[in-house]
Length: 129
Image 1 (cartoon, rainbow, N blue to C red):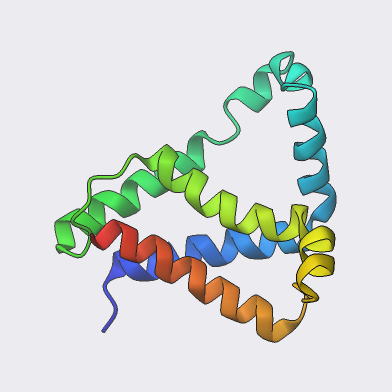
Image 2 (cartoon, one colour):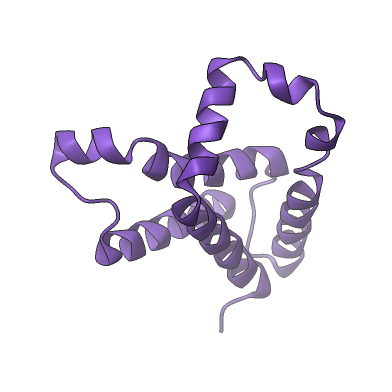
């Protein structure tokens, strides 16, 4: 039986993955905002607190994983968020260039399923180390 922290981690990754896949305009918007060094975001107080809940969620998952004895690494929730986001975001932001260079369609269902599992395995193995 999978421990709760494992299930929650996989659910969080799946949700992040699916969100980025379903919202390529969001990924493009974030990429453009980075080009502008977050100039527009700095003017918005609402955006500053936007990711507080996801960090709290990750912190809770990490604490449960520690309590269950399945996560032995003490990880920073923001670092874990960045790790998950980096994997999921890259697939969308670099889909066309990566796909052209390696002649691989990242939107194929089989590839997406494999990548979603690979990301979850990588994050969980990092937390178990």
